[in-house]
Length: 109
Ligand SMILES: CC(C)(COP(=O)(O)OP(=O)(O)OC[C@H]1O[C@@H](n2cnc3c(N)ncnc32)[C@H](O)[C@@H]1OP(=O)(O)O)[C@@H](O)C(=O)NCCC(=O)NCCS
Image (cartoon, rainbow, N blue to C red; front, top):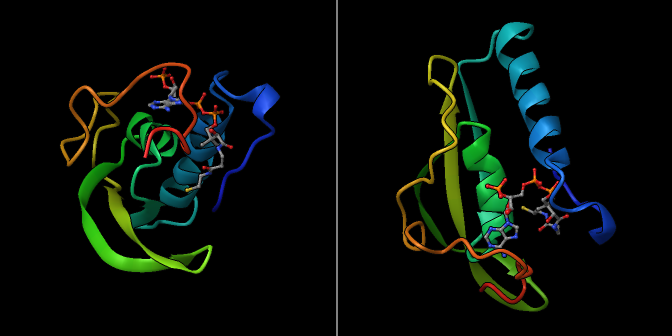
């Protein structure tokens, strides 16, 4: 799954709702054990969406994504079927104090 919303609809919980619905379907209907997600390092809004959907930060994949001709690091997140969803911010390189309202992911790198 990828999520990309028109800027006018950001901040209403839409991406989180969609992700939670898909993950619940994966665990409850499809019987999945584990779901993984990767996010371009520095994309704090996307990271927050994953945290709110119960994903935990598991590490950094170095130079894993080619973006605009440049190799960029990715953050790896995972959620297990028996994890309890928590909205708490995950531990990680920028987890503490990284959240600032009003900044776009681009600005937040
Ligand atoms: C990522 C994206 C889909 C989020 O959609 P959304 O519907 O606004 O997400 P939600 O409202 O469910 O949650 C966003 C959370 O991120 C937070 N947030 C937003 N911008 C942030 C920033 N720059 N730094 C930290 N947190 C930020 C919001 O405050 C909210 O958290 P909160 O509920 O604890 O306050 C949207 O920002 C987007 O389309 N971005 C561009 C595309 C993109 O980056 N896609 C992800 C690729 S991996």
